[in-house]
Length: 252
Ligand SMILES: [Zn+2]
Figure (cartoon, rainbow, N blue to C red):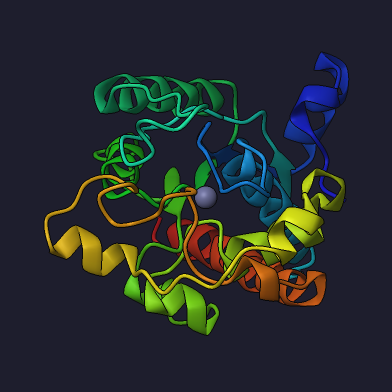
């Protein structure tokens, strides 16, 4: 279990900072509709659970002793695609970038060695806004871990690689592993498979779930999700985060 920064006292954090290098892992998500079966906070839940796996990997690497701490989340994002569904709370990209940048700079000023923004809300404008938040910082000081890239996407499940990566088998499996009590499993079991690739829809110039035919704010196959698959996916996301952090630290 990762140490949570929000649960520390100032004295216990001070002791950690004095003992070895400390990395802050900041979950980034969105408040966004995820079908009739997953919670609005799904993306933040996934980021937090993946961070727990990454922290174990990072703190277990004897070649580079460090503490990896779970930071309080940035739970709002750019969610234009979900417009028209209840619970799509979008913030402007520039506001997200400025806020995330301030959070990163705050940790660095407080003596943290590195900050990683861990993002699992995969809307391209949101991803770009998060990446912009660390642009121009000194080498090794900050990183972004997000599966919206060829490098990490190919390590995930067939459904994810197909582009049907919103509230389908991929995300439902992850939430079943991370926070099972928040999944409406009866609703998920009743949902028919929907073979709509978001990446293909974006390439075709469509900019909303409704325009792509996602009438219930999901695509893919939520009925086929399992906690076991989610557990395996969390390991892969944890590896992604740990690798991004270690590669950034190695670049100093
Ligand atoms: Zn999501």
